[in-house]
Length: 113
Length: 111
Image (tube, rainbow over all chains, first blue to last red; front, top):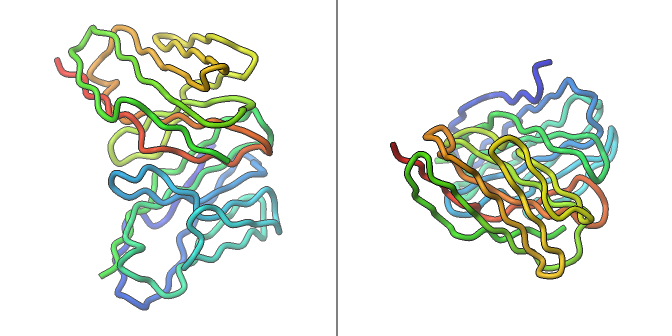
């Protein structure tokens, strides 16, 4: 199993550009989520999904869109990038339930200039 | 969902020593999970302790949970340089799976 994969690893955007961060998992996990990590801030939940066709907002959803058309994929879209979205983005997945661990991807480092 | 608060924020010890870090949370939980993050990498799950458990071991890791004090501790025995990382706790309440994280404890193990 490849686990959770994220592409790209690094990205530089100009303010106002849009892009999609890709996340895929091959473990048949129902639950997937996106986090951003800023220095000294820990991880903050952006959006999450409990299954194909179902998404919901986390703590910091503004400026981001998600969709979940398949169990495997959970892309994160930045509609109009802003410098405040400079961060490291992590995708995670798990089985849906109380006692399951989450598996994290390696992250995407995004810089918005 | 609630986030845990890890304490201390930073911890520096020598190889071979034990490292203890603590986590406090605010409301009732179903379980509490600990994760490790090596610099620049994604989080890795270490151990899960359920609300009806008081102590759990996994290799050199020992986790305790005190639901009356709403706190947990993670002990790493005989630390190695490879244990250098940030450690996060995640209390899990209510509906499943949604985890939130605090700022973590940064552990530095020196030779």
